[in-house]
Image (tube, rainbow, N blue to C red):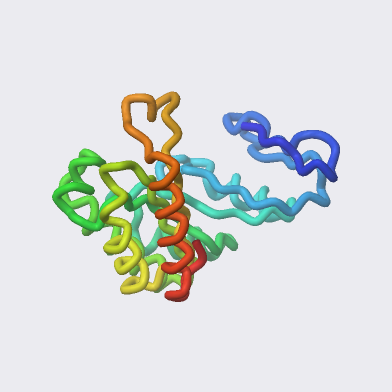
Length: 193
């Protein structure tokens, strides 16, 4: 995993070989970027990775899978390690459609429950939504779901028709503009877009 550094800083920010027992290293100790990983509760060295990252001054966020392993006990443990932000993906506010998209029965209900439990553990909750021609008309309902469940951040991704998304349609330029205007308006309801 490697990201490009800011133009003001020379060299890339690296997180080398997650499989090493030593875990995480940060090459530039002064770099205080955040680490967002989709590592879930099944990873045995997650606590060690979080601890090492926090010791290096890296702000850590998690993007856990909504599974039975995402328990209140596990959320409390992760929060106690200093993780402040957690994100989940919700693409539709309609259970029948969201659950089909995720391929898991009752996934939307489990995701909403996870949001509530994360908030109870004092996480800042970010919801990730991918905008496609099939999800765009549900954005107001997703925004309402965020407000009702006290999510703090809405990370909206515009599908780019490459890789895994190559089989999906993307919005046209006018639709992109309409969505951006809607997101601006939605941001007035108390969450960051």
